[in-house]
Image 1: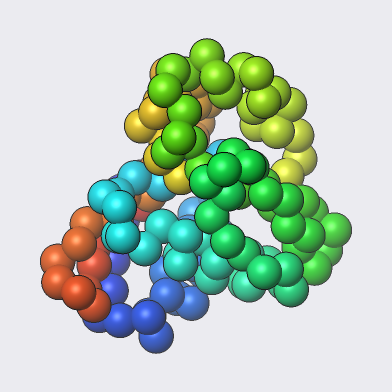
Image 2: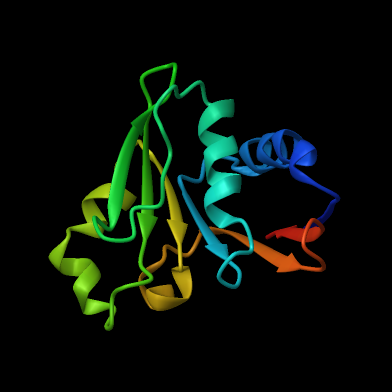
Length: 138
């Protein structure tokens, strides 16, 4: 487990790099944190580090957005905030994404926690102040 203190938006490129370095072959990253903690902002930075030039926005209504990394690796950005039951994730075919070669970045993971793979990377963002966060990579 790694804990990172974030003092502002300027620290996010380094946090994104640490997350990518810690993947160690895993392709599903589950993000945990309250509304407004900065999950989408951090995911935007991860996509940028992977060379994506796509506009990264939360897929709250679409459930999943696809972005293209510079080396052709797809990035799938999930937002399960609006689902009411984990079974709804089956309807959108989450398994195909999780079993693919793409990197899956999952917001509101607690809504589907029982569906996450055993080797999932968990990233928790704790709000300390309007600009400060603690990011835990596990």
